[in-house]
Image: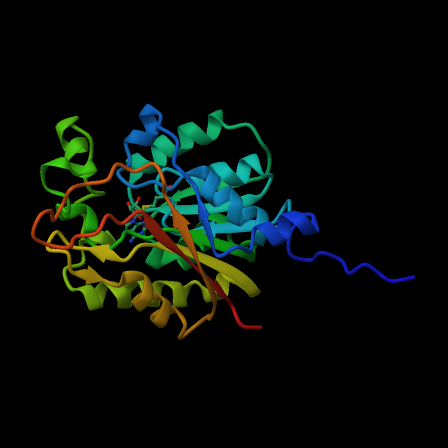
Length: 276
Ligand SMILES: C[S@@+](CC[C@H](N)C(=O)[O-])C[C@H]1O[C@@H](n2cnc3c(N)ncnc32)[C@H](O)[C@@H]1O
């Protein structure tokens, strides 16, 4: 009798496994609640759930070093995974904790405030010698200083937030990676941060970094996703890129009728693996 091989990666059936490996997918973020609106760039829980279901099993440990308002932690609770999220800004942690409390599910989720570059000491302070070994990391860092730059004239979503009195960027803190002035310093800061997280991850653990190439208002592209993929490959094996498409964003009429300026409605989900 043929022996069926055990699924050591996730809890999915074969059919769901195969469906999840398509290299692009559409997730349209739902309209946000008041607490979620506090944050200028959260990712949808459905997006994180998709990856967590593929790269972990029930009871696994997940790390998000740029936790924002806790979408990863909320998805983990709903899917009975344990998680640690680190976020620089106390107000995002506060809103996130409130939403986490209202979420149904199970597992341990720890929402910690601090600079992700100090993750090792933050973890030691929280867990002492019994720090969990993470099975998976999923995160979305600041897309450099994208939120500080107007990219769409009067009509941009960020400007609309401004008109409603909502935060248009994360903070003025110099620890905020979105406030680094030089592009190459920003890529290096992120690269060395992910490098420093290696000891917290199990061998062969997967990582997913959600990021976007950045189009300036003049239409020029800063290829954050590609430069980051290159830099993070110094420490982890790059396994794949997946394209997350948003199909419900308003089209902006940016360059018409003289210049090509694109509407960017996709993000890269870069998949790495820690070598054994
Ligand atoms: C793209 S957002 C993440 C949003 C998150 N995925 C969510 O859905 O809520 C990036 C986050 O990184 C945070 N951040 C910036 N610099 C940081 C640092 N040095 N350490 C930890 N968090 C930082 C920002 O405050 C922001 O909330």
